[in-house]
Length: 271
Image (cartoon, rainbow, N blue to C red; front, top):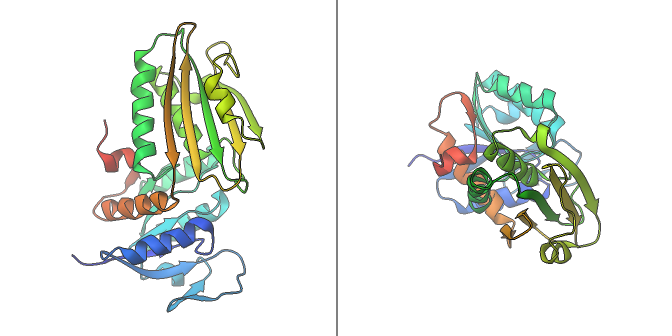
C-alpha cells in the first residue's frame, strides 16, 4: 500500500502531539508537514520543520488533519480548498456561520468532521439515537460531560453530539430541545449518576452538566429517566491516543472519497 501523506495542524498542542505519535506508528502513514498557528520555541519535530498554515506547508500532503480552534480551522479550510486537499476535522465549538461555511466547502473537497474520533463514542452516539427513538416522552434526558481542568469549551463537542442524537431520536433539532448548560469545577458526576432527582430537565428539554477535573481525558453519560426507571449510557476514555488513532483511521478511509461532508458514522458504516 502506498503511504498516505498527511499534514498535522496545531502540532504542538495535546492532540497534535498525540496525532504525531499515532501517525508515526502507522506503516501506511507518512507525515509530510507540521504546522502551528502560534510562535513556538521548538521549530522542528524529527526532520520536519514546523511551519505556519500556508499553501507552501500543505502542498505535498494528500490529507490535512486539524484539531485546533474554529478560527484556525476555517483558515486551514480555505487553503485546503485552494489546493484541493481533503481534510479531517476534530475541532469543536463552531458557530452556525462557520458550520455553514464548512458545509459549503465540502461541495469542493472531501471533509470528515467529528466532535469525537473515538469509535466507542461514535457507537454510543448511534445507540443514544436508537434508545431516544424507542422511549416515550415521559423519559427526560440529560448529558453529563467530564474533562480535564484545561478544557475550554463546554458543553464539549462530544456532549453536543450526544444531545443531537437524543434530539434526532425524537425527530427534533437540538436547538429546539436545548435546556440548561451548567459548568462546574468540582466533580459531581458520582452524585448525579446516583441521584435521579438531581439536575432533572424540565418540559422535555435536554440539560447539560459539564465538569472539569484534574487530568480526566473524557467521560460522558446520557441519562434518561422517568418516574419508574433510569437508563444510563456511558463511555469513559482511558487513553488520549484513542482519539488520534481514530483520526488516523478516518484519514485512511477518507483518501478514496469524493467531495462531501462525512462523519465517523460513515467510517463505522452505521445507519
